[in-house]
Image (cartoon, rainbow, N blue to C red; front, side):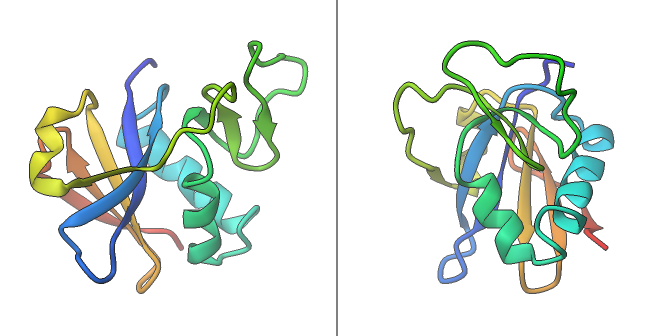
Length: 137
């Protein structure tokens, strides 16, 4: 459950450079791919660019459109309706930018890159090796 990951997109002008946000929980593909599909279908209304913008807005404790309303976030966190719970809002964190070839320097099990051109999510292992591509639709 505590499997960290990064979610974002590749730079269209330099596809080997990625812009991502940290996600603390549920980073396994079997959990995160369905959550991204649900956010894309409901909150982003099947607009992949809107999904990318929503994901890149914050670092996240958890991504998922259906968060239990009875559970309160920790101090300095907030829910973003239809997207998830932020990791920490005490200071604005910049988007993480790095070459995919340096992925092993990060502490994460998975990297997910959303592609607005074909509405897909490419999955990479924590060392930057490709694992698969999943359609959002």
